[in-house]
Image 1: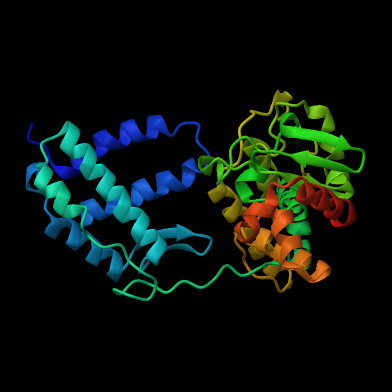
Image 2: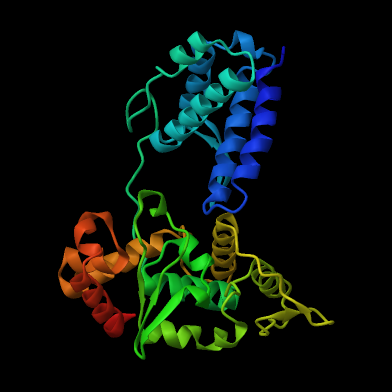
Length: 342
């Protein structure tokens, strides 16, 4: 079967997308798929599968070192890839080549050679040096409250108080909450970043989280608290200067039910950019942040308050104290911290 690499990639992409339909982090993986497609189109658009060699993949790697298109909170621009992004795309290309051996006519010897292409290290081989994720404190986010959709603000507030990853706040539902006591709840998201390693994620919710969640209690246990459609509606109403809809389960003149669909991470980043733009137009000095920086900010706050790395590790379940995270003693410590500050 004589087929070009890009046509074969499109076939593989259909199968891959179907396999990722309900998986957490799907948006990021689809972005990686799109980036790899652009790389193939830019470097080997007409190459046949049977002619794919290690030299072809080296050309793609050189393209990544020179700069590729990325989209983030600062817009769409061409920059050199970081080592992490470079390696993700290279690994994805190797997986694609494995599929080509099984289902197309790529010679196995070519795949073996391609699999030997070295991964990058930060600051070497021409890849960009990445800076550590900087923390963002809540005092900065509070400045955006008048310029942000209320439900998006609540999402960020819950994420910060609970030390959550963005995906864990996005998919928050009451059916995943254990009401352990009157002043401390435990949220266990069924899907999370470390699930593939067999880890259980435990998030502690104290009185401040409970007060934040109280208006949402009547929405039912299976409803995502921060549905995409409602955030879009409120964002549009703020942009157009209209009264913001405060009904959490219905919208529109006919009172249609809100679709139970979670927000995509990229949407969150966009809402932050829009809120910052509106704030700056009003003379407020605030900078754009990535949603994941809130978790780092919370860890910094917990560490400073308790003068303890263990406290931060237990509360946000950082990998610096994996053994302690799952001990009953640490669970009690996490609940204590939640009662005091969350």
